Image 1 (cartoon, rainbow, N blue to C red):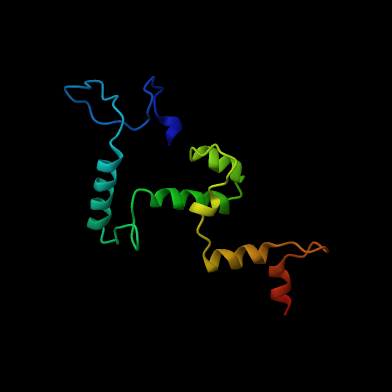
Image 2: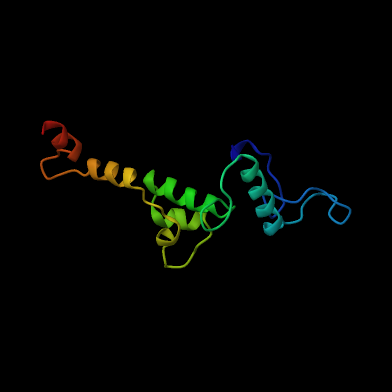
Length: 124
């Protein structure tokens, strides 16, 4: 979807709407306001909101980390995409391994004879 966007010289992809002070709409987005708007939309959708047991804008980073790791994207690439350039992987912070995903990964593990766990389970 991002490839379809026209090229821009703006330093940010997502910016505030044009205003008197920034008529070209090239001012950085206010993250606090964006999170408030996101949480209001989530609440209108009837989903839980908040850091403890609901959704925040930052929840999308957790989703992205988990989805890309499960899609076999190298951790260093994911860290770079998320803006983390230190030697410490952010996977431990953002990754959420569900029991279902864990079992699926376990089924895919190859053994020395080339048999996948799922093949062994189906034979039993």
